[in-house]
Image (cartoon, one colour):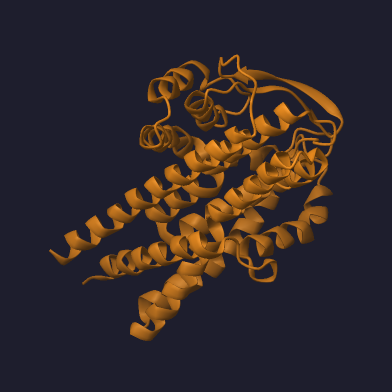
Length: 329
């Protein structure tokens, strides 16, 4: 078996192990979370690059500087794989498994959404708002129950791309370098990719880079969501119809793709007026349902998210197996 086939073989093993670890345990501890480490690196050097008079240039240099550090560390592990024997490749597989485990958020997001659901079922709106605040960037303190429900569904749908499908796509295509690269840009976007006074120019490059990396996964997401809607007995026709009609109904080039598919599958209308840092933003509606959202819609959204994630796992797992079998043949 040549070096490339060996790399695919061990990456495939790491993919299966990492995703199963996520299914079982959810997020790793904060102290040992690679994404948290990247976030701390970003926080540590943000002030230095923010001093640039040209904020847009400072943001570009900031992104590439942190990316350079991450890529260098990953390349060291790839070199260890290339020159070492079986023991070194075993170490590499453990590191790759852990990186996959920490990059994919299936169980964690399901648990967060479930906590919102549990609070609503107990008629505890304040607790529901607190749990929702952990998974959204919008203001939650003045939300009514219907807005809590739709905001939770929106977060679940968007995170199917950001937290599941995109990491799988980039790991399958480029191994640990791909997923580390993607998670670095994703972390940048979550920290500085905002359209506010501080980050309008400084964070613009990070936000656009994140849009670029999620472009293909966002469009691929509707395939898995559509099949999942069939499996769960949801309305597949409405999933595709609402997706086709509303997939561009968002300022982001990607967000409306999974969101519109979820809206169609669950017979919901998402979007609408939303408050961010005290500023009300009139976002377009996604979906044409007239019914009032119910707490049970969160449960249905969790099921749709989980089945879509399992389908993506099986698809990319099959890709790894197919390539390895081809190498052996």
